[in-house]
Image 1 (cartoon, helix red, strand yellow):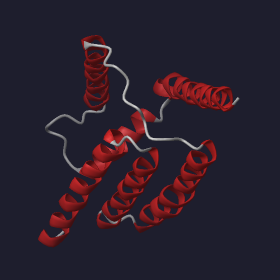
Image 2: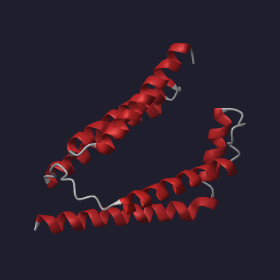
Image 3: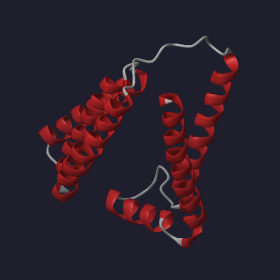
Image 4: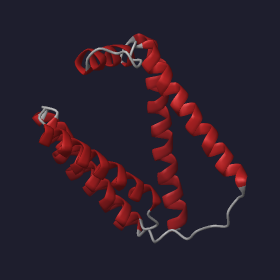
Length: 167
């Protein structure tokens, strides 16, 4: 990649990061959804710059297109209003959040360490292949299935809460 490509990569990476932060910090769910569309479009440009035009097109068509239309449809169907800030629960929630972030960073670091992707990793292609082989091996099958069940439980809970509040 030439210097202009590297500059574009970092510019769209920064745009994706800023848009992701705006999505999380936004009080209005519709604005959050639009910020997520901007994240998906930025990621599409990054994939295109890295030489993956098929994934770049899929990112726009599937995620920025179909999934975000579904999100906006659900937001409008449920008539979700602007979030009203609740009273702060104190430092306990922030302490729990900091502990969870630390655990996530440690888990990602553990995956990198086991895959041999430390600071002295050779090339991105070999690193990506090692990482994919490790994550999609039988070793992490239980974690993958547990995550699938957790996401399904979250969806069922969201539907139950939406029905309860509508009545």
